[in-house]
Image (tube, rainbow, N blue to C red; front, side, top):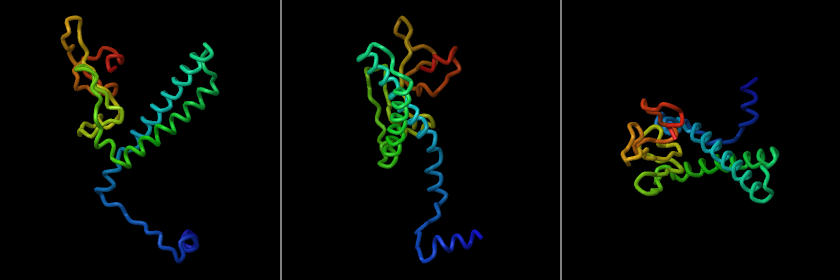
Length: 158
């Protein structure tokens, strides 16, 4: 029965389907997590922006309906942004924005070869009161994704 269906659907049509090589399949591996991260990031930005707009204009938090709508719109925008960035190889460019010597931001991730570096992240040097770098809080850490043995709390990742 499945063969009859295939004959009916694809009869006299060249669908130009090709099989991906092992290299091509490897290149697409792991692309779902960045899509999810960008979608969730877009949703969070949309929802917080909606609350901020509502607090500014009315002095009250936004309604659940408005926040949900903003979250969905933000998630769609974030996902489309990631697809576009991947399509036009933006992560391969993947620059970081330097804010002084103690903070760098990679809003779209980058391709340094670090497994966590492809996700949006930031680098921040954790300093003590004397201006010295705290153990495990160096500028090379991919925050908030990368944990260190010196972390005492999940908040130390930020």
